[in-house]
Image 1 (cartoon, rainbow, N blue to C red):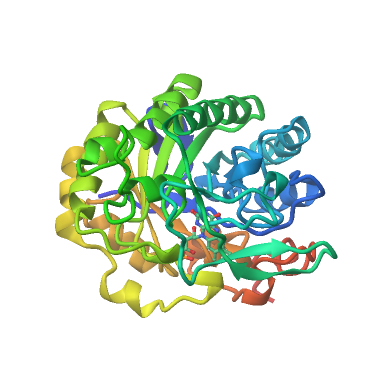
Image 2 (cartoon, rainbow, N blue to C red; image 1 turned 180 degrees about the vertical axis):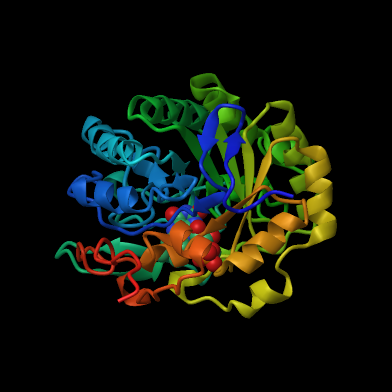
Length: 379
Ligand SMILES: Cc1cc2nc3c(=O)[nH]c(=O)nc-3n(C[C@H](O)[C@H](O)[C@H](O)COP(=O)(O)O)c2cc1C
């Protein structure tokens, strides 16, 4: 059986020193122009004890800006900024993948270029779902997602090219690979959901092949730019975050995706059951439905790469128990990484974990609640 602390060769190319993954987490600490900075490099470097770090989600283009203060990878300054983080993580012996997305309808005209409407799979608005904005006076806050505009077929194809450029930029910025964010109700997830994607062009409709076409075209570009062993895909089947409607075809779609990603030789599938809004999560949901073994076994049979599981892991025992099922290969920790930069060491030695303060999760306040957590000391 796989041991949480043993090394793992990801995608045949990326050597991970353990099976612990730092889950992607938006922390809104960028500099002007959505540029990653030295403080962010320090934050990631502090957490390089993880076998693999997944960065906070990063915008492929200005039209993807659904939240204030998130980084991009489309300007030269952003690419240089990310180089600080990749250099620092490599200097201390870690591995780091860039998580990339387009936010789709989860945006607001105040953040979009020229105040345009958010980009949607359809014109259907995300009801009762919030996005994080900054007003003209710099004040931050949550507002309801704006009414989206349905993307034309050619615009969807063009967006594949935008992702391709982002993958090339990620490679040049020194990342070991990329994670395509196809989870949590953002654009790619919106395309895959049969209740939401009522399009009648080649990117929509009743069959899984059409609804996952956008994802697969994006994956093909990632593979072309970086090679399959450096590409992962994050999915949240059953996720309701960001007003995602229940999808009666979710299992069929998931298994189709697993088969297609397998054919492409993608390094890993990263599965997250449910995400909390704004750091408040009903974790009891995790305990009850932690791993649906029957479904995971089917994914496993369809996908020969690694499976990363994320959500609700907070101690080495439950993480090891998940590995012991033989259904997953790597365990991702999100919130525990916020206050425990040396999480891997703490888990290994059974040291206590520090608690983070959710009010510092998304603040532009710099060091506080970000890089000011000490490593464990017995004193
Ligand atoms: C502050 C914060 C920011 C997050 N940002 C992202 C993100 O940028 N991309 C993503 O895929 N998930 C994001 N998530 C979800 C986490 O990756 C993870 O799935 C979730 O926290 C559940 O894992 P956990 O129980 O180990 O925290 C975020 C979670 C938190 C707490």
